[in-house]
Image (tube, rainbow, N blue to C red; front, side, top):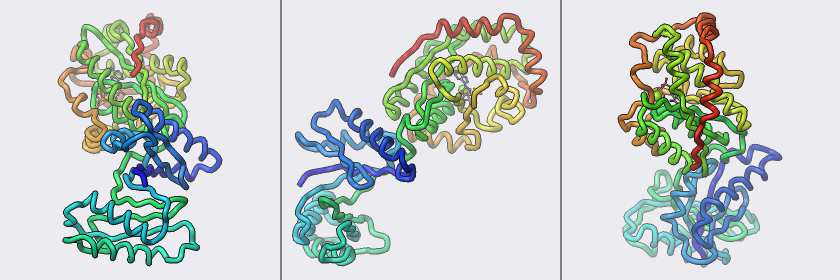
Length: 390
Ligand code: ATP
Ligand code: MG
């Protein structure tokens, strides 16, 4: 008998021929994340994965928070694995597991059995009823509740037998890096970290870019972004962040644009710069944290006037989410507390009092064309990029 962690994953099963590649990616990721703890191995076991420790005790407190952050994992279940599938053995291990997990027994429960070998002398229902009866007989304070139990004890017969009773939800999605690559425009705000996470959750490998405008933006504002990148890397395994010095670009726009159009031109400059970085790192698209209607530059008109600056797709995974929904995700993934630190990512000097909410694309493009040397400043900013790796 040994302690194991069952790892459930979802959508991969639907992906036909790619399935094995993607499963292997997930296995490899789990092995890599657990590398620094000795003895952990991962096995495939009929549509799920099995993490075991072949050298010592299974340290669930360490392993569960790591594995539940791996994108593509739907849920994990701590349990035991044993060879002997006789009904006596099932009873014994189920009772031991139950006593260990719920020592005072003050819960309602049911037992659900599953068997892959249909030659087993009892049906699944008979096994469930037998094991349930045995536990009930040997513990006090227990109640059976087949409709809405506190605890569902699973007994599964496969190549080996498994008993488990807790299902800890993870994020689901697809294994990181199984869906191509994109570059995320990452600010220190609440939104773009969530956008980055949601793309990563769909399997998209991400790199991030932050536009830094010292002295108009502070060192602490930049530190926020570094801390956010580090947090996102807990899910993605690693993250590259390009910090692009943007002060000169920003000043150039400031000096040559009517204030109410400034934000749109600045956002266009960001997209143009990000696209050049993205092309160099083989990204297939850009990602921003825009949500429709949230601020002046996030109306449909503004987004249209901004988007024509880029020749690659610009993904906006938050576009249809409400602020509260975005906040909920950011709290869950742990970026919220960093994002609400009070250092602004853009100086108030560059924010117009009355930004235009319905800019005309053609007018914006005409103004931009007339700004002498803007493209050169953008190229220069990329030459001076500083790269951080998490
Ligand atoms: P966030 O919460 O992500 O900061 P926001 O609600 O403040 O977004 P804006 O400031 O209009 O909205 O920014 C919209 C998007 O533009 C951001 O989500 C981000 O993707 C990108 N962005 C804005 N400022 C920067 C910056 N300094 N560096 C990198 N990306 C930026
Ligand atoms: Mg912001």
